[in-house]
Amino acid sequence: MPLRSYPPGRMVAYLGPTNSGKTHRGIECLVASGEGVYAAPLRMLAWEGYERLAARLGDQNVGLVTGEERINEDAPITCRTAEMAPMRCKTLVLDEVQWAADPERGWAWTRLLAGCECDELVLTGEVGALPLVRSVLGDVGVEVEFCDRLSPLTVSHKPVKLSNVPDRSVVVAFSRKAVHHVAGLLTQSGRSVAVLYGALPPEARRLQVARFVSGEAEVCVATDVIGHGVNLPCDAVYFTETSKFDGEVRRSLLPWEIAQIGGRAGRYGLSSKGEVGVVKGLVGFNADISLVKRIENPGKLIEGRPAYREVKWGLVAPTLDDLDVSEPEELAEALNKWSTSAVNALAEFSWARVADLRPLISRLRVLSRKQKQKGQSKKGMKSASLLTEMSLDDAWHLARAPLDMDDQLDTWTLIETAKAILDRSHELGTMLYIKTKTATIETLEQRARVLTALRWATLAFPDRIGGISHKQVVGKLDSVAQSLNAKLDRAVRNGIARCISCGNICAPWFSECDECHRRRISYRFGWRDWEEEEDWDECDDDEDDENWDEGGGDDWDEEEGKGLSGNDD
Image (cartoon, rainbow, N blue to C red; front, side):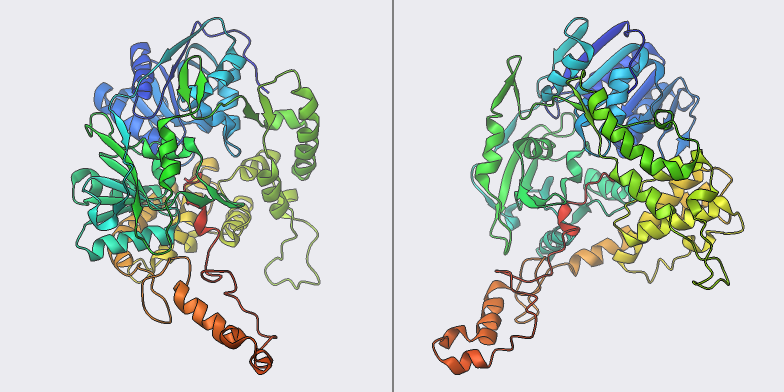
């Protein structure tokens, strides 16, 4: 774990709720310094910071550096994602410091918080992050300034009907299907709607945001992607549901999650007021107003300030130098050993926890599989894998690729990218080909994921991937984003979920309404006349009933239910 050899000359933390101006105050420190880095949690926020500063200071004085683009990266002030921030600079503004506890990306914040050597360290984030800040930086020398919300935020104790949701509102649902369904219902009632969810590439999201900001779209329907710093001129946020699938289980939203999402209402400078509430009367949806009311009383006090949670530790992950390996095939084992030994090594740091390294190891294992060569039978397959043929640095870069090995498309993209890095004759140009005019929304979203990975690869391995260039990939992504936006209106209009049996509106994660499901199950199992033995004899016990789950069927898609905010980006 990197630890700084000397403390910053000045350390200040601006802590407060959403819409309290803390990020603005941090960026003002950067402007006053004239040199340094703004480290953001998301690419969209880095872009927002870049555009804001470039308009103020001039394009030549501001740069943008993320995993997927570079603009004027030698400028005195650069806006970056946290992973791309340097360990040395004059002034570092580390935004949303509580992200140090994020299971997937927290290590990037922890290394900067504990190790960045700078003249001025400026932190922004939730009040709940103060225990971590105190533990890492010490009680002495850190200026803590609490920021109050700049516009009032109230909870509407009376649920509203979807048809009565006012203009300039954001309606929240936690899956792609649910977003399309709710947006379809609004469109059917004559409203113009923008949509935001994780499967949309950032370029398409920006176009949707622009529609809402300009007033072209009266209402925005979004997943919790808006909770990660998407700034919209909305007066109100209404939840259609207050539970979501978090990747493991479906659970109720935590108070800090509701506050983070709902706090986007009443954005200072964009809207004069903010309201949070729930929508009632949607078939299959359940929004618990009592959960939303909990944000009125956070329940915790940290140094006299209300907080929804307490962030006590940051995640720590190794660098390549920490692993002390010479061959790429040693990386997976070295990561496992480091994870075990780090538990003891970090014992003296009460604020440090070992990050989950399984995603890195899973990518390395994919690369270690034997690969069939062209014209080669499976029986005569070489024992060499892609991993054994590449350099240690290349293997480490690919281990950190923004790809999920639980997804077949991402796995294929990783393998094809690795082949292209090893052999320039293995061109990836065909991966850019797509008939955007005839492609479905789902196909365009999948292709956007591939293109996003290729955009990363063309920067991580410049001039080493045959058949494509960074400029080509960016151009194709823009084309896909434009096509997606052109097709979203139609997808939304057709997105209303209807029962396959009776045609009535049903929950978007089921294929049948509750009534038709109960009738079908009753008929198949003879529940109406269960005392008559012959009714049971007629039941086909050998046929699997895929819709046994009360209230619906197996159409619930756990991936869709995650909320799609990822960490995606």
